Length: 258
Image (tube, rainbow, N blue to C red; front, side):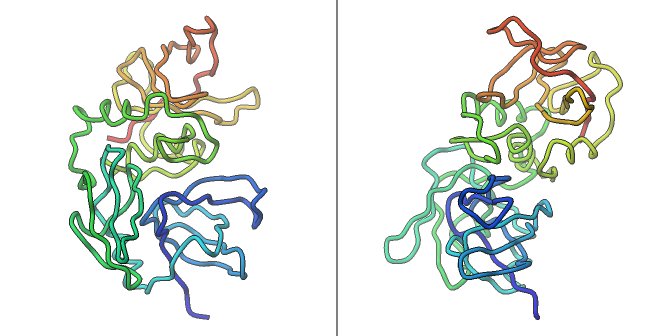
């Protein structure tokens, strides 16, 4: 059977561990996220994403099929929806799609995919154009107070590794989806005092498994998704929550990607 390809044509679509509405949401597809189809039924489609090679099931009504050529165009897409809540795509027949930050677009003005024409309304950013050293903190802080949502990747609900992945996407840095996968990327920073803004700090549980990640702001603060996206202090023991007066996450390793 020839390979089939698709893209997400909606704002944000749940990617589930199993083909069921009751199944765990392991991630989300944002508009323009492209994927290869592994298996398809009437109701559910198993996919592997082009951006981070992540597998899961999506509702068969929540995507459109595209040609291999269109898939490859989205693989090379450099335009992202920016840090604004009013971004949207105006389509034919007065249809529109709300865009969350980090959605992939083929053009900053207008484009056509799957025989659908879209006109971009709002702010766009060219991937890799913002300066990592001077802009990283601003992009990360855009998500402050976004509620924690397992598998989420939007300002309306986001998890710790999804937060890091989406923020880094603006700077052209392709992180994997899960914290444990991200910890296998990058270069080790030997000491906390050598950490700088944009490094990722990883935290483990009692079994030594990586369970949390956040973005360093200098070498004494971290912005991360825990209950909500928040800024906390960090020391050699881990994250210190000033609200509770306790350490909440045990530091395992710090990695650098730029």
